[in-house]
Length: 234
Ligand code: C5P
Image (cartoon, rainbow, N blue to C red; front, side):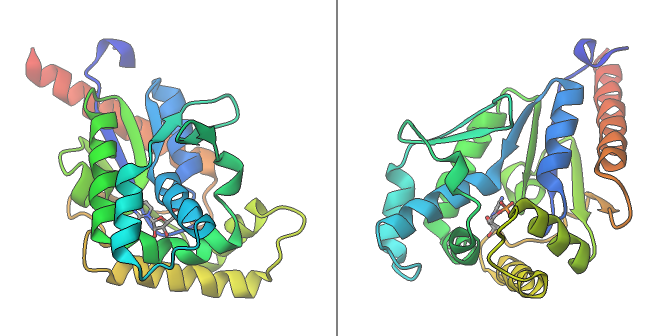
C-alpha cells in the first residue's frame, strides 16, 4: 500500500537545539508528501520583530500583544520553508546570533506560546503534517500519531549550528556550544510547555548517524503508523 492510499497522520519531532530536527523533518515531509512546519521559525519571527521594535524580553505584555497582532505565515518553498510576517518575507533574518540569544526568553512568554500553538494546531488540523519544535508531542499535538524525540551530543549539535552560520560565524564553536546549552536550559526550565520528551515519543540519539539515516527511520515508522490506522478503519 503506498502512502497516498493510506491514512494521513501527523508527525511531531521535538528535541533540543541543533539536533537536526528541521532537516530531518523536511526530508520526512518530502518522502511522505506531507507539509513541513518549522515551529522554531515562528518563535524566531516574533523575536526578530520584538528586537527590531526595541522591546525587551521582560516586557511580557507588549510582546504578548505583538505575537497576537502579527500575521505569521509559513510557505513551502523550493529552498525550504519561507516565513512571512505581515506579508513580508523575513526568512533570511531569523537565524542571527541576536535572535538565537533572545528567542528562548520570548518563547517562554505564555501569551506568545498560546498564540503560536493556536496557529500550529490550525496548520495540522487537516493531518499530513510533519511539525518540529520543543513541545509539539507534549502540548501542541498530543494526539500526533507518531512522536519522535531527536537529540545528539552537545558537541555535534554545536557543530551543526556552526556550519549553518556560514563563513563568518562571528562566534567560536566553544562559545556556540555554551549558547546552545543555555538555550536548552531555558527551554527545559520554562514553566509553560517546556522542552521534555513525551512519554509516548520514540527517542533517537542521532550522534554518528547521517541525517538521511534518521529521516529514513522516521519515514518507516510513519508509514507503519499510517498503515496500522488504515487497517483499523477497514
Ligand atoms: O528550532 P529552533 O532552534 O529554530 O527554535 C528556536 C527557539 O524557539 C528554541 O530555542 C525555543 O526557545 C523556541 N521554540 C519553542 N517551541 C517550539 C519551537 C521553538 O519554544 N515548538
